[in-house]
Structure formats: structure tokens, C-alpha cells
Image 1: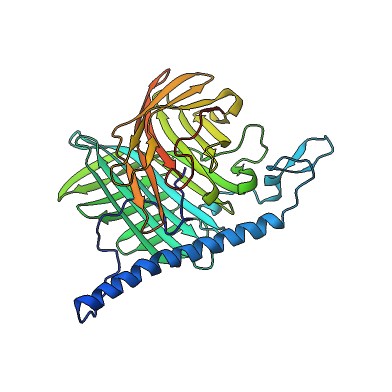
Image 2: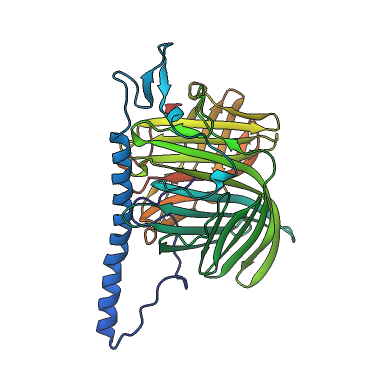
Length: 408
């Protein structure tokens, strides 16, 4: 799901040493250099905290000014003439594309790409790249990228953060450029450029097929999800974008091609109060499965959303027919955070087993988004086969490191 997290300090990912960090120059002595380094250590989290606090105040103000009917559920508004609660989402503007490809003024927003691509010479490679924008007292833009060689398991990561929004103004797309990083979408064509220590990527993508507008089962508002007390989110995907381009790994250039999953999510929702397990799966029967289970600080289920899409269209999944059960965990040797990296997903159509290609897919973005998350490629077996991406967010800061199993 989008990864999400531009809400704790800076934003989400693993940070190798890279040229995008600010260079502190003008030191006249080693002691002065140490003092400047220490000052930066305190200022960086402070700036991000100000952005997050501002976003949270904005969200709280929105929540206070949004009426809720007595006796209605947290995700419902007043009662209609039929006696059924009116969805809070109907009060918001409907999602409209391509206009909503562009940036919004919401508290949180992100654009997310993930995929497993084939190398021209036979190898396979997985990557994810994301742009996060947090609007608060201080606007922050964060970019994350990770690339994994599926032959060797070697993982490359990089991240970048800047104040403001380094983007050209566009009415029906986006154009983020930061140093030599770039994420652009114009007229159905997307361009991605990023680099870090020992690697780079350059991909051109084309939209294909209609977008998937996610909604809860029974909801009349496609593209909007109600998180109850945590707010409301716009959310759509383009599950199968045709991609081609080039990866460079340790000075070896590899032409690649394949299918990429794109997510765009925004709204005035409070990500600090939530964690989630998000699945974006391409199945060999031609269908695409998006699932995510939100949990609170105690590890209790908040909600589950799911969509199954194929050539016939997209269908929201009824949480009553789903069961997402955690399996094996992996403990990061770097941070000590425990992640559930294997899952069993029970659907009306059968049971899926989800396992990672490699368990070490932690992204430490404590220097850009002040959080740590797990994001990596996974294999699917069981009643259907396939592959895709899994994201585990909130495990580093919520009390319950392992969400409680629940029928969703």
C-alpha cells in the first residue's frame, strides 16, 4: 500500500551512504565538524516532526469539523431515509482521472511503483520506488528506492528528502525531480530515474487497461476507503504497467522489461495510529489481487480492504470471506524489529501461501521519514500461483510487533 509513511519523522526506506545527503562544508577543525554533525542530527528529525505534527493538526481539525451521527459507526455519517448509515465518503469529491494523477493538498500522499522484471540475459530483478509528500507546518518530499538481484539476493537501497515539493505544476500528472531522481507521469507515460551507491535504474512505463479504484465491499464510492477514526483515503492502482529500461548494478548494465504495479494514495488520514500488511499480487490466472489489513497500536484489526481485478473488471472483496493468517517471522539483525514475512490468505476461491524471495527486505528510512518498514518481492503458491510485493509497516513503532490473527 502503498508505503506510505511520511508521518513519523522523515519517510520510508533503507539508507546507504549516498551523494544526496547534504555536505557540511567550511569546517575549520575536527571539533567544529563534529559540532555541525551533531547539530544536523538534531535538526533533521525536528524538521520532519514539525511536518508530521502539522499534518496531524490538519487531520484533527478536519475530523472535528466533520459531523457524525449519534450511534453511527466511526466510518459512517448520518442515517439515510432507509435507516442505513450514509457513507462519509459521499461528502467528498469523487475520484477523477487523469486529473487525480496530480498532487493534492492533503496531509499525506504517495505514488508507489513495484515490480519484478526480467533481465535481457535471463536474470530477474525486483524493485520498488516511491515518492511521499507530507503537508504540515513544513512540507516534506521523500523518495525511496530499493533494487534486489533475485539471483544473488543482493539488495541496493537509497533515499532522499527535501523541504517543499520539487515538482513542476501539472493538472493531470506529476513531475518530481530531485537531484538525479525523477518520477514523471504525462499522458499515460511514466518515467522513473534513480540512483544510489552501486546501482541505478531508468524505466519507461506505459499505462494499460483501466485503473482499479479501490473501495470497501458494499460501498458506493469507488476510489475511497474509510479508515474510521483514522480518516479517509483516496486510493487507486494501475496493476499492470508495461515497463522497459535498464538497471545498473556495480557498473554492469542490465536491460530489463516486465510488469509494474503502480499505486497512488492520498488523504487526511492519520498513519501514525496505524500499521498495515499490504499485498499486491499478480496471479498466473491473469487476475491481480490487492489486500491490506490495518491494525492499531495494540495489534487489533481496524479494517481489511481487498480488490480482485481481471479482464472482466474489479471486484471489492468482502472481509467476512477473507482470512489473513501470519506465519513465520524474520528478525532484522540491524534493528531488532520482528516482521511476519510468510502469510496464508484464505479467499472464497481457495488458499494462497505467500513467502518472500528473501527474508531480508527491511528498509530503514529513519533518516528521511523516521520509520522502518519491510518491502520486498514474494512468491505465491496454493490454489493459484504468482508473485508480487508485500509491505509491512508500523512494526517498528506500534506496541504489537505481530498483529493478532483475525478473520477479515
